[in-house]
Image 1 (tube, rainbow, N blue to C red):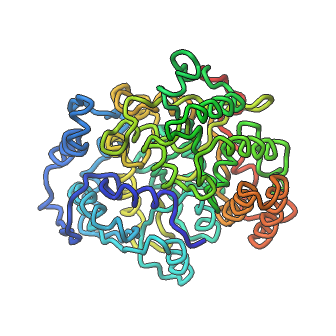
Image 2 (tube, rainbow, N blue to C red; image 1 turned 90 degrees about the vertical axis):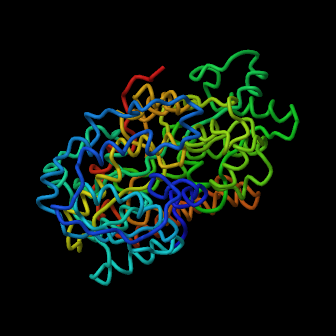
Length: 517
């Protein structure tokens, strides 16, 4: 499973932004160690973690931003935690933080205020981005990992948690009043917990959404787009994207990700979730060839007829380039495609985009998909687990995550208090629909081997998209691969390293809820 994670890939594309979401353009990796008596005033450090200090100047001018916070200060952990207590317990200690090598410089700069607030020295342990998984696992297996904390692609959570590589964080979260209730349930449950224990803090909190070009789709609809009713179903999206193809002008009807590996799987999961997809039964038997799975393949093949050329090779980077370059009329992608489309330095379709509520499928459910993203964890072998926890709580605090969204750098907030903030919504085009959708989100469980399974299935779906096999054969082949991988990882006959009941609540948090529109 040694490939770039989705989160790392996106940050590498947006290298001008900060690797950890903080201000970019800095150098220097040597961070000073502080004795408690030499630490700066806490209030002055916190005052600098502000819209004026962290959000790009051109974006502040574009949206006429004031210095008003884009978050709720009463929920912002860095403004509610007792930093004097942190200093009294941690000043002079150190934390080793594993980070993708390409992000180390921006990470160093972003961690300076944490060092000033806490007195903890942060030592960065750079790991090549394209081998992060393998290198991290090798260090864990050695029993002498060179890091205290790490951030990684959330589908790997089961791989790291099941063998006991990660520290339990419940006691630290309680002691330092981490606002877990402010996270949307889908992120708290799927990025934070394994086997009923808190082992991670959500970091990059994604959701997939559907985006439209207003000038094209309104021409087809004959009037303004209503986010909830204009494209109520996937059948209607198929029709609209087909009509868009007829308009010409070098713009294809739809963009989506159907490249080999997890990209194609994520598109399939996205659509199949609306048909009521359950990936497993309660004995952990995979259900890929269910009616919901087959329906999603039918829709993918229908959309393919209206799709931009090269769809079978499209991962996130290719999809993003086509969308922001104005080459597609509709797009199935992550929420950041709706934010970045409004930034003139990133997009050619500024003022011509609207993100809509998820289209539905007859007989299905409303289940916008929480797919991918990343989480922040502490190593079970950490020499300073509490200091590592405090550092990760700082990096994931709501104010910094809100300013990531303002900077449109692809690192997504997962807090209710952020996406519900009206000032944030004024600068984040998809935020209202995004927030509503998260209350209904669908997510694949973070099982050991889950990413390997999604890779294998995506390879088969890609073969169907390229005409090598049928859609049904793709799911059958994927199901065979899943059973083999799961047996290798101890899932057979209902047995496994995690109970179905522990993950069931997070797989569709919207079950039984009224629609938001």
